[in-house]
Image 1: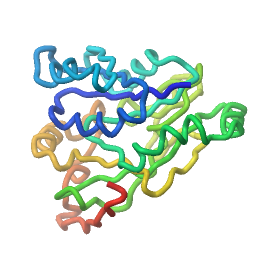
Image 2: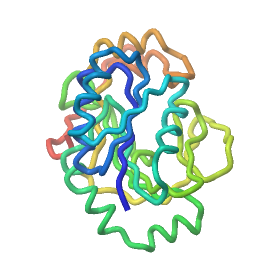
Image 3: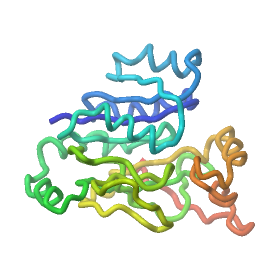
Image 4: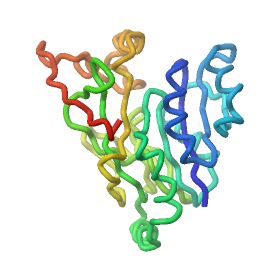
Length: 245
């Protein structure tokens, strides 16, 4: 059994290194879809370091995020674990240090059997924090993510919405409705296993997001979803403990 990293990236140079270095120690190989122009700093950066970080790079024009993720899944051998990350995210040091031993040595066969018999994905759920203002403050309560670390068996695929995708064994296509989620067999990770999201700290990303508001292809976000204000009032942020960064 092996662990494969999945990374989708476009123009996140040099921030993507943060994501790669939180993923690489846990993975045997990282599969990357690069969606931008071929002659860029980021494309050259990935190519120059593919042997250091065990990257397999695929130049894959962007259609939807679901297509990108499905493409990576189809390049991955079945009966292995997948750890997915976006270029503007980072796993905590505790996760990076511990997840490999957990997946390959500590999980009971009963977990695999239970998920398999129920025909639902086996996942490790961890909290997802959105940073705002600086490197230590986050927006509101974290959301437990059940689509990042999962066991890949034959028939698993990405479905539902083109942006808010979910892994499932159910026959496609499924209809996505707000609030829907794929049923999974979830193992909750320790509290210091976290996924931290840096996108709101990038001024260029915030400007790009403002030009793509209400676009289903990019998440159908409204203006307040990417602002530090709610109804014109600053969000009350919380401090992310050091061990969760």
